Image (cartoon, rainbow, N blue to C red; front, side, top):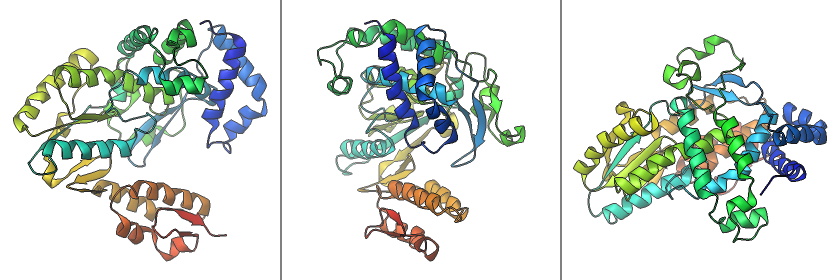
Length: 398
């Protein structure tokens, strides 16, 4: 298929709607929407002519839940990121293992937690025998992704999947026959070109620091793009970075499942685990994984975070403690929530309600009814709104 200008323009309208979702009140969205037809027409033109160059990013530090460097693309580039995601995410996801949890619909943190609990139950035969969880982590993952290696992996995946049929869900959304192949639906040459533009972008080029340089004090150099080698690092904050980070570590996933034969394995971004009753076998995996990461992906295993936990004593993963037959919020998560609540700005009641509902959305997935009452059933919150009977949602008072 060859992409035409009218089709690209229609796809950019879809991408704009996705990029603007839940951000309609932001000034940059209102400004872009004020001349929407012209802005999208110009964007379509530079893309179809393949002269598109991303604008400089804004760089800043966030401190919640922990100090982290973020590069935020300008809104026109975010529209392009959503366009790329719209074109490729089903294709890439078709190559992922079931237990890759990040940036995939219906496979987020909750799915990762529940899958770990399921793996433990299966391996321990319902907690009738002891089993162990090997937890591993990659040091400064996003900052050490080799962009040239990533590009080779992406282009190889695109070439390999071009003749594969679309998943039924993708065919239904795109309105094409489920017997269609990707090369019949996508302009693969255009996608390959856009892949190279996005992957090979150095976010440090002409970036604007939105905060004083003092804000970077205390940040681990391994977590800053300003301290990485040339050709390394993806900007945290871009939608495409989340997708492409999964593409990069899909190489690790395939190694863990196909070569090392880890049946009960799962990964969320750079945190991954293996569950087994054989503790010695788990220990033998560590040097093999470490060598593979270094040789094949240029990444380092964070040896300070390698640990083996007994399932009977519980294991922390993605902000939850997975214990025999129940799941509770982790101590670290509770500490962050309590600290954030102490710093709450009650002059903005709508924001308070949104913040509380986001925490309730996390906590209601665990055994935490008493904890939710303790945290939120307080006079300062009840003056702003009220809760339902199960303490799962807060509504603003009329």
